[in-house]
Length: 401
Ligand SMILES: Cc1cc2nc3c(=O)[nH]c(=O)nc-3n(C[C@H](O)[C@H](O)[C@H](O)COP(=O)(O)OP(=O)(O)OC[C@H]3O[C@@H](n4cnc5c(N)ncnc54)[C@H](O)[C@@H]3O)c2cc1C
Image (cartoon, rainbow, N blue to C red; front, side):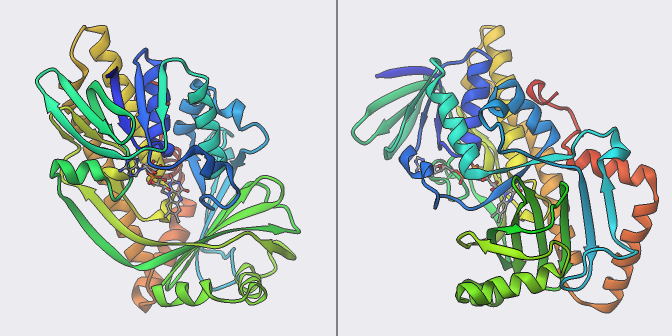
């Protein structure tokens, strides 16, 4: 039987980050995933790119992940939010966040999920405190007074003081433990793809609010942008089946003339959207982190950042327990106390934000346009939102400081 301080089920971006963060604080970790690491070496694995908040990026600096991604990180220097029409990105009522107004540091960093996942995996392989077992199948787990045991197909039994479930929104561990969820499906889906364009983006992230949902153009390295096009399920399904040339023409119409010629598109992915919150984050020696605990609308690009804050908070809880000679598995309630409120506030804000902007009701439309225009002129409101976007609010775990 392999014994470690922690077992993490789920080697996605959150699970792998949590493994590295806890190992950084001295814990031994075994991480298991049902997918082979070979899959994320290929170009057709997960077409999403993530906006990593400035605070989350600090953790990646502490863990040396920024160096492994050298040349693949794009800073976000400006965010432009416009309530409007297809192809019209800047209006007198746009809300413009400029990093120069907040001291000049980027508000966030764009990186492609596939490359981030590969960098995390390489860091795990080089870390002698972490053992990764993948692909494998979790057959079940059991809590005993001494700890947790996990049974794997073809890999026997593992034991640890605590079991961390980072196995995504359909979490097997959460279901096995009987923790319920509150789920609100959105009548929206998102298309994600990457395009090359003629005119440089200069680090500007655009979010254009249209009646079906936000259309985001997020800067990537080498004059490319990641598109997150949220719309009604019917519109998304139709766009997914468009021939390549027709899809490119529709994107060109949506970009307007802002970035000149729009070049070839990468493959398209589509994602159904819902808000899903676990009723509890912990049960005995098990804790949920990442999408297993909370999955939110991508409107503000905060879902992964919430999971990364869980990972950093877990590392502090583990460190505190180890420094005081305490049983880690018995200290997980501190995670619940720390993360639950923060995550619920953010989830509720993104939900309200999406409802407010994804409609075409005339009085609401006029009020929100006026609201954006006003907020653009009020410096304290601006710096509040810049700090929120950068994840610099609340009591920050040590790796995020
Ligand atoms: C369109 C879109 C755009 C987004 N953009 C952003 C953004 O810009 N910024 C941001 O912060 N967030 C963003 N998000 C949210 C973000 O992508 C997710 O919150 C994040 O990927 C969740 O990571 P995770 O590791 O918790 O879960 P997952 O990525 O789902 O990983 C779960 C892992 O667990 C493994 N697994 C599952 N079941 C088992 C099992 N039974 N046994 C073993 N392993 C198992 C899986 O193989 C997988 O590796 C976006 C989401 C969407 C849909």
